Length: 457
Image (cartoon, rainbow, N blue to C red; front, side):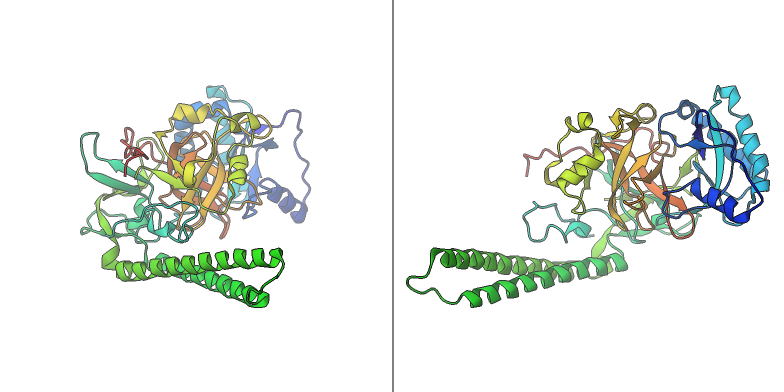
């Protein structure tokens, strides 16, 4: 991992106690969900968002991974530097760390330390799609799975793209490993299904839970009405008013239950068979590789309303705004998107990543991003300004930014820009501490599906 030096910090004293060494190693990455073991570091440091290293990372990153390959280091990531558990000792890490630091002075970088940690990189791997509805619709919180693209291998769709500004042909971008488990290109035509069997069953269960909730509400209101009894001449106005309010709520609950029940009937009749959920077919899926930009290439196009991130219901409007725009000055310039649909309007450039305009609660530059994935839903995180961007958890309390099943999700920033497509994550054991995303090398000049005029039907 690349860190900025802590000014005035002295080298830590080490004794031969294994327990003390492990405690110190754990503290290097304190706060990350998987509590990864730090194998070795060249000196004390703290992570930073903005640093001169971002402008030369393209060249420096290539040197680092080529160095690791040349010495057969079993590395899994270089931001931070991760290696497979049990494959590198602190003594063995000293040489590679020193050689990494040797590359820094020639670029004018003198305040960066190197840290190695144990880490496993994981690839988070038809019908007319339903439109989004207003927040008062009874089906609003169960129809989400039937609106965004969620291909067959339980991944997530990223962006809708047009072949060109003159073409009406529309494609869906996602991660290649969502569609294929093998790396060769000699495969028959593959059809892409919206909602795999597991995701479809989960969606149906959510609908049935919603019907059960309305059943509970109906029973409760009926009991309250029975307790009030029939209207009698001369009863107090408060009782009459309460009876009317409960009657209105009872009718609303019955109507909502009927609406969700009808929604369930339509879904089971029109979506149950996999043949009814075919979106299209794969038209291009290059093998997973290291591309010309020396970042991971893992994408595929499927032939198939503009690009949006549905912000869901885990966070209230106020909670989302405070997290996405933690500094009061920048928050004042933004409003919560209508209907919770965050309309993506442009592609974030490398220069934008290196010179972020957003501020955190302490007034420091930061890049806060959001995604909505099939596995973890809506999550916020903090991104780095380095190519093949790494996204860290927003905080320890908020949990991981992604998990297996989120691959292919589009990652957006606070300015409604596309930062990239989620392709995987790294962490120790079963937890994901860092998420990786990339799209700009694969599509240097993308033509986003145009924003639909909200005034048009």
